[in-house]
Structure formats: C-alpha cells, structure tokens
Length: 169
Image (tube, rainbow, N blue to C red):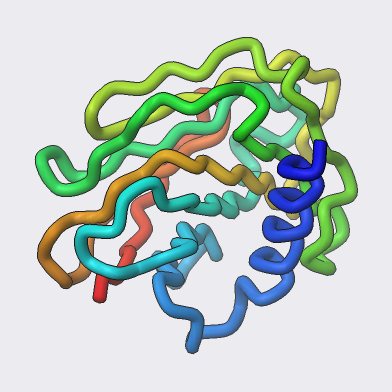
C-alpha cells in the first residue's frame, strides 16, 4: 500500500509540472499536449517509470475509459511486463495536475506488452470528456543506450494515435 501511495504522489507531482519545458525527459508533440515523462532520462537506464499524459480528444469524447497504449521505437526502448499493482491510472478532469479519479489494481483487466509496446486495459465506468487528461505510470521501461530524440506513439481506447518526442540524455 505504501508503494501505491508513493506512486500516486509521484504521479501527481509529475502531472503538476507537466507544462514545464525544463523537465528532463518531457516529451510533447507540441500540438495536443500529450507527454511521456521519464523518471530517469539517462541513456541505458533500466526499470524506468514513464508517465503518459494523454488529453481526451473530440473523437473519443463520451466513451468509457477502456485502454491506454504506448508504442516505442523497435530495438531502442525495452518494455517489460508490469503487475497490476505497479501501474497507476487516473484522470485529471479539471486541468489542475491532480488526479480527480484514480483506479486501483482491480480496475485493470489486463496488461499486454511485447518488447517495444504496452496496452493497459481497464474495466471502468468513467465517461471520458474532451479536456480530461488520462495519466498512466508504467514502471518497466528501459531507455535506449544512445542519447537522442525518440518518437513514442500513444493512444486512448481505439482513438487516434499521437506521436510524442522523448529526449534521452
């Protein structure tokens, strides 16, 4: 339980600073405010928690929150499996950076991953609204061994994918 509280607090802390361009590892496409924030943006870092912040688009407004996914460049990042208890999922519905809705492990119906992507599926009754920001902490990513900018694709439900640039130092 202490780990969950820590992750939730870390998620809120990261979320509240999402707009700060000085954050190491903050990636954004500049258009839709999607971000992938790294706990450690060092080249070669392993077991890194990455926080996805994905705004709800008009295309999925009114849908029930059901899935969050990220796809990393093949042969660059490594995505390992994570337990339901280690993943933090929530929604910032009023834009203040704090999670207004948070889902425990029992709301996660599945975590599917391969070497370069993951999808977290959820069983919630939360109706997404345009302007909401869905936040997910995934704790099992290994960064590329070379510094540089990398493109990560993120999506909610079956909605449109967005490409986010992540900087590895």
